[in-house]
Image (tube, rainbow, N blue to C red):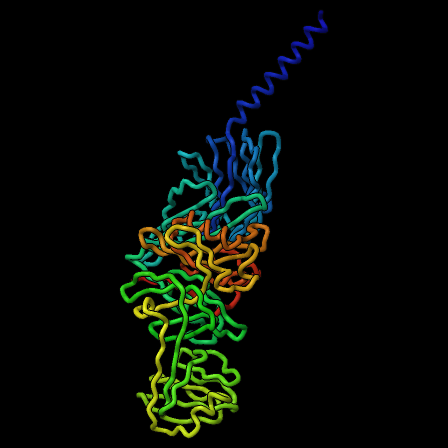
Length: 486
C-alpha cells in the first residue's frame, strides 16, 4: 500500500512539473525576422505574448545574446541571415529558453524595444556611437523611417520617405528559405526611367554606381546585356533608341504623360541615303558581317569599329562626311550609319551632301513612349499570372528552374513596384518565373514584367544595397531602372 501511495505521489509531482512547464512556456516564438536598413540591422522576434527575456553582449563584445525565457519554439523556422552590422546568427534551445546569438561586426552596439498587438521584441544593432544616444545626421529632406503593419508573417515594411515604402520578406516553402526585397513608389511623387551604365553603351557598371551617377532614390538592374556591355533588348531613353533585338518580346514603357505600358514590341528601322533604302540591322551594337548599324550619341564619342567597312556621318538630314578608316566620331546632333559587305555595296557611289533619313517604328502603342525597356518575359497581366517565356523564345537558363529574379510591377493604384528575390544561397533558393509572378502579385502588382536575373539581380534604395547578389559581390550591368522624384 505504501509503495502504491509513493508511486501515486511521484506521478502527481511529475504531472505538476509538466503542467507548470506548460504554463511557464505559454509564450510561443512564431518567427524571427531580419531587416537591414540605413541606420541599423533589425531582428524581430514575433510571439503570441510577451515573455521574460535578457539581452546582453558576450565578454568579448563581439556577439549579442538574446535569451528568451519560458518560450516554446515548436515549429520555428531558424532563419539564417547576415547584414551590414550582423555577421551571422546561431540558435540554441535550453529547456524552456530560446537563445539567439548574433555575431556582430566590429564596434557595434544595440537597442531593445517592445511592441504590442501583436507582441514583438525587436533588437536593433547599430554603431556604438548611435547606440549610446547620438543620432545620425540626416539630410534636410529626410525623415525617420516609420514601420508599417503588413499583416503578412515574415514581412517587414517601413515608409522611408513620403511615398516610398520598403519591404523585406522572408518565408519558407517545402524546399527551404526565400528572401525578397521590394520598393513601392507613389506615382504622384516619383517616376521611373531607364539609365545607362556609365552614361553610354557599352558601359557596364554596378547598380549602386548607376544609382549614384543619376542621383536616384532607388534602382534595380534592368536589361539583358552582352559580355561587351551592348544592350540586348529594344531600349529607348528620352526618345533615343539605345538597343535593339531580333526577337519580338515583352517590354515596359512610360508614355509622355507618365502612364505605364506593357506589351510585345519589335523594332523596324530603315535608312535612306541618296536614292537607296536599306533596313537597319541594329542600333548601338557590334557591327557584324554584311550588316547596317546605327550609332548615336548613346554609344559615346565614336563607333569603335574596324577598318573593314564604311561609315556615313549624318547631320541635318545630309551625309556630312564619309569615313573608311573605322571608329568614326559620332556627332552629338546626328548619327552614324555603319555598313559592311553587301550593305556597303548597296551604297556604292554615295557622296557627301546626299540626302539622308532614318525611320524607326516600334508599333503604334509605343509611339508616345519616350522611355522603353525591352526585357521579359511578362509575369502578370491584369492581375493574372501570365508567364510568356516559352512563346518569346527565352533560353532555358532564364525560362527553367529557380534563380535570383528582378522585376518591375504596377499596383492597382498605379504605383511602381520594384522587386528582387535572392537565389543560389542558403538564405534564399530563388524562384521559378511562375513563383516569381505569384510573389509579385502577392506584393500588390497587377501588371509586371521580368528583368535580367541571376548574379545581376540587385536592388538599391537610398544608396544601400538591399539584397545579397548571388555572385557574392555586385555584378556590373548594362542598364538599371531608376526611381527619381518628379
